[in-house]
Figure 1: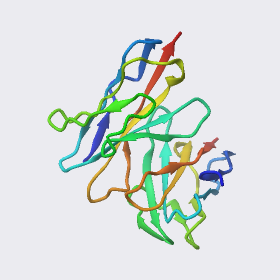
Figure 2 (figure 1 turned 45 degrees about the vertical axis):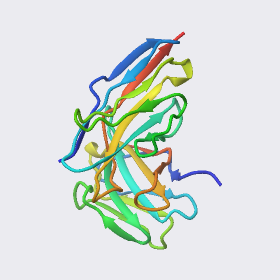
Figure 3 (figure 1 turned 30 degrees about the vertical axis):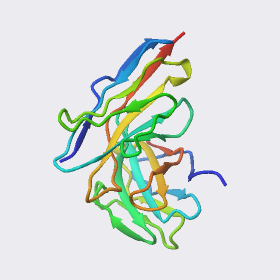
Figure 4 (figure 1 turned 60 degrees about the vertical axis):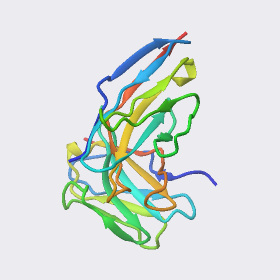
Length: 110
Length: 113
């Protein structure tokens, strides 16, 4: 069965510091990986997907198939990055069904 | 216009009652999904519609849960004989196709007393 693990429930950093939100997954095939973000009082929205290889709001994530990880990184955190972040995957055959991790609440302090 | 619309935003009812949750997807999106998010958890898949038909309902927890999308647009999630364990935020999402990015609504917060 596929599973997404986000080991940190809470993460707190200071403004301007680097931030890394960890995500590990288990899946035997070739998954597609995503990061979703939910800002306070807003709906869940897609931040980035690994196949796009984009940098959104300064965030990047690299799929490491050897370590089965998809960590989200940003070199200089901003206060507006404070939010709940969810890592998710879809499987090749059922690529509509998102499996989410439990999420990491990021707080960026001034 | 706006994104995915879900009504009501909050629903409080007593154990044993019947509830209906509505989802109005983004215009033109043929794929529609329901997820359930319990406190402290990520969203969990319930059901996926492609057009009018439920292509995958494997996430529905039991036969008290049922969903329809009769005209391929608005969907209704129906829960019979509600139980306290059904309390959660029910999220709806839609996309242009099955492998396209999913756009989520604000969710319906369901509380069973």
